[in-house]
Image (cartoon, rainbow, N blue to C red; front, side, top):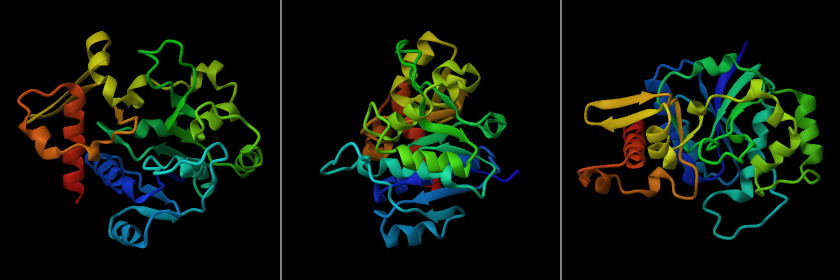
Length: 260
C-alpha cells in the first residue's frame, strides 16, 4: 500500500504549523512522508522555502466556501473547503490527514491500520453532547467516486459550522453510529483542555527541561483562533510555573525551532 501523512496549508500563516508538525513526526520516528497540500493563497516565497524541506508539495486549486465570506480572514475560513482535496489524493491507498495546527507526541503510524474515516469526537470528554467527528485528524482511503460526490454536494449539504468539518459530517451522516470509526481521544486532544483531561481522566502530560512525558496524549490539537505561533516563546520561558496548555505551547515552539 502507498501511504502518507498529509496536511493542508491554506495561507502563509500556517507555514509555522507545517514546520512544527513535520518536526514532531520526524522526532518520533514516523517513517511515512509528509505531503503538504498548498492552496492558491500561499505565496511563491513560502513555497520556495518549503521546497528546501523534505516534504512533498502538491499545489491544489481552491474550493470556495459556499457558506460565508470573511474579512481579515486570518483563520483561512474562506479556503477551508479546499481541505476536502485530501480526498482527491488517488495516488495513495490510505492517508492520515493532520491539521497544520497539530503536533504528535509519539509514533502514530498505527493509524494506518484504522479503517476509512476513522476520526475523533475531539472534546467529548468535556462536552458529552458532542457527536460529530473533528476533521483535524482523519484516516482516509481516497476514491474517485467519493470525491466526485463531495464536489457535487458542496452547495447542497449543510455545514453546521460553515466549514469543511460541518460539511463532512453531513456527507457522512451515519458516522455517529459507527463506533468502529471512533478513534481514542488521545489522537486528537485539544491543547486548551489538557489540564482538565489530565486531572479528570487517565491522561498525563508534562513538558519540562527534562523533556516530554505523555501518557494517552498522541496528538495535540491547538484548536481555536489563537495558535502557538501567536504566543511569545521568550515570555513563556520566563514563567516559573506553566500550566499544561503553556507547556504544550513551549513544546510546539521547540519543535518549530528545531525545524528551522
